[in-house]
Structure formats: C-alpha cells, structure tokens
Image (tube, rainbow, N blue to C red):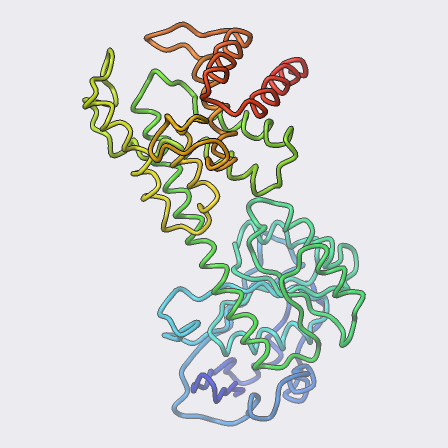
Length: 412
C-alpha cells in the first residue's frame, strides 16, 4: 500500500491499494507506467520525505484515483485526487478544478500529488492541442501549463485562452525552467498570470494556486452581479414597448463614437455599459408615471427625475461600475446648468456623461415614439444644434458629434 501524508492538511490518503497497485496506474497516451515503489519516488521530483511516506496508517482517510478517458481521446487523463470532506481554501465549497498540462509524466504526477493533498480536483493533459476543448468541457478554475511541449506549446495555448471571452478569466500558471527569463517575458506577453519553476516547492505551489483560484472566484462573483444588473436593465426596457431596442442601439453607437474620439478601452466599455444601465433606476418608478400616456404633471416629473439617483444607488456597490455611475447620474445635466439632478454646468459635468447624452438624445430623436415620428439624421442633428445654441449642450463636443454622425452613416 502507498500513502501520501501531509502535515499541512493533517490527513493521510490511501492512494492505491491491492496486491500490485502500482502497475495499474497509467496515464493514457503518455506511454508510461509506474512499475515500482522506487519509480514513484523517482518521479516525485519536488516531494520531500515528509510528503512521501511509504507506511501503513490505520487511521487513514480513504481516497481514490479516478481515471476518465475523455471521448475516446487517448492524449489525456482526468484524475481526482482529494480527501472526502476536505476543505479547499479553508471553506466547505466544491473543490476547485486544476488542469495540469505537461508532456512529462513525472512532472504531472508531482503536480497531481501535491494538488491532491490540498484538496483540489486535478485534470491532466499531456499535450497543448487538447487543452482548448478540454477547458470548454471541464471548465477548470486554474491551469498549470508547461511552456515547452511538442506541437502546440504553452505560449500558443495561453494566447488562445486569453483571447476567448469564455476562458480569458481562467488563471494560467506557466511551468518554466529555473531563471528562464525569455520564457517569462513571452509568458507575460501572452497573458500568463504567474510562473513556477521545476522542481515544485509544495508550499509555493499551494500558495500560488490558492491565491489565483480565490481571485478567479471573486471575479466570477463580480461578473454574475454585473449580469444581474444588465438583466434588470433589459427588463426595464421591455416594460416600455415604445423604446424598441434603445439600449442595443446606444451600445453600438457608444462603441463607434468612443473609437472616433480615441477613447481608451475602459472609457469605451463604460460608454457601452452606460447604454444598458443609464436608465436602470426606472425600476423604482411606478408604472403610473413611467408608462403614462400624455404629458407628465410637475409632480410626475419630480418622481421621474429620481430614476438617476435610484440607478446610482443600485450600481454603487460594484467597483467595476465606477466609470458608469457618472453616466447614470448625470446624463440629464445641461451645459447651462438647467439640467438635473445636480444642476451642474459646463465642464463640471463628467465628460463621459456629456458624450453619452448626445448619443442618447440622437437615438431618441431618430426613433419613432407614440408622441412623435422618427426624425431623419439631418433633422435630429438640426434639433440638437438648436439646443446647443440655446446653451444645453457642449458646443465643441456637438461639432465633433455632427462630424462623427455624417462619417458614420457614409461608412455604413
């Protein structure tokens, strides 16, 4: 019987049992088999004597190795190595999944053993070409990726994963040779999150994996919260059948105008998110006011104006919304100070809110509503210029917007 014992997790795992257990452990497609007790020690590389103990322990907590041949692909093996009732990161949660990608069986075995002792579910792959499909299927929380592999190397794999919207948030730790400066630099360029050198240090591996898994799960929670807000915003738009696909048009126009103004990626993102979220506060406006047919009374108008303050409160708890909140609160301000909610004047109005306001007004003018027909682009720009002359808009920004609209529809 072979057992792994860890002083950190205070448990002993019975890895394999039986009359001749070692000869039955194989990695599919890797052309190797562990044949003896001595081979296990040779393969362990970074395991110290306190980590690898060949002895009987009557108090051992039973565990298992599960081999999962994936869809007939003999280039990978999925292995679960964990303790029943174990805690990952100190919490009673589903164990995090770690994908170990290395064409060297010895290194994979070491990583599997070390990560298994920490309570992670470990998935193995012995080539880069299988990783993208495997990530989609298994959805790991972290990838331990060897740099040098035949065929598709680690750099190519990481680049593909970081370019994909569905996998870009999965942390990637590159496994490199000691002091391999060139690989580290290239790894940073393709988006690697961290680096480890061979042979593994157990404490360092555990600390780095734990930190990145925690960060990944925090990012997922944040992303889920954002999606909830977007869903609320879209449901608000669906309450008012008169606006059509107002939000989607604002997102598209915000992207194009932001690029025209040479905005940064984050500013363009805020404009796009503003397209969805600018009126999210209308969730707190009664239908009797929001959907009222005809002109609003002064009392109704006071209620309606509260939507910008409600929207700000809804989005304020999320740090990722910091750039969007000024748009939500101030997209009804006017250049001469006659707007709401704060009566800000000129450049006291946040610049992104000024930009978004032009997009919002233009789309409202060029869309058909029960109380008006859809204006042509020329008619809408004329109305907006008249409002600018009256002191409602930023004159310089309005000139830029007019040029943008003319060029935008020429290109369309």
